[in-house]
Image (cartoon, rainbow, N blue to C red; front, side, top):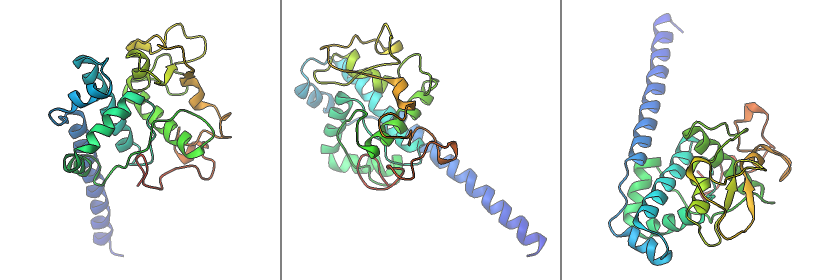
Length: 232
């Protein structure tokens, strides 16, 4: 290969990297500034009558955070940790053409839905939750392995006192659930802890919390396959 060919190849690769980063940034900006369809908050309030308009707007912000986690993970599988954000996602999907356009501009392909979950026995769900946890923490400058507060998406159900919502605290012994976003634990249900996302006690690994080079992988466990909840 001649020197000119090598230089051309290097420049082509550099341009491709720059283009990919610019496209990623444009998609992230689109998600952050995305305007939900008219009337969607009324539909959410019909499902959750206790929510005020301000609550709906906060839920919309949290759902954007979930979409950004999917984008920033490289469009890998992400799982939804909030029941009320999941409700809004449901309503958005019902605007079928609008949602298809959103997915195309935000991700370049369709983002399928899976129900909200908490850490448990399912390794793929756990990997998806850890991935969501990681990128929402990064979004709010929180250390995902040593959290002192919660990102909005994980604080939301407790803050809005959502019936059957998932309640989180940063770590055991936390005096306040929800970190800077508030929340009191609401109906007294089970509390989940942000510090558990870096623990392998649920499924023998911490797959999804970091990339494969970090040693977190289990060899499988939802790294990027499948269509559900953000799969490729």
